[in-house]
Length: 87
Image 1 (cartoon, helix red, strand yellow):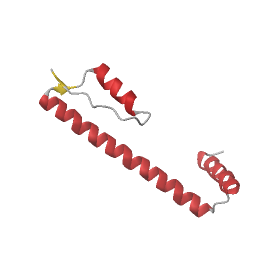
Image 2 (cartoon, helix red, strand yellow):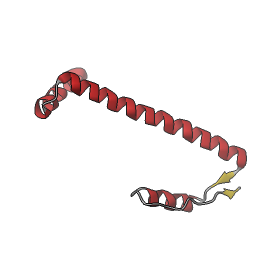
Image 3 (tube, helix red, strand yellow):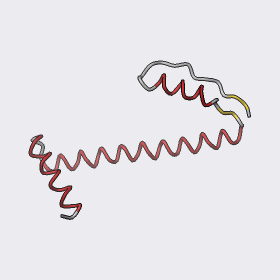
Image 4 (tube, helix red, strand yellow):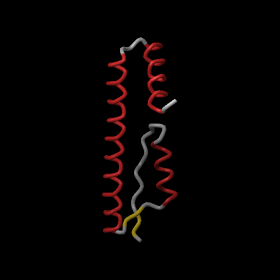
């Protein structure tokens, strides 16, 4: 079975079980993928800009502080942003 045929079968099962129309399912799938792709492009763009700024200024967070900050933000808590160190 070709990959496209496998995806079509999977989509048919989902459409049948959820009761949405095939067109609505397709539109939602495209919308979801577009949103994910846009978020990825924004993430990469912002990451590259931050890297250029770090290279320009020499400011960087200590790895342990960065990790603590990210772990505090992950569950949705408010965290105090650490201050950068100079190389």
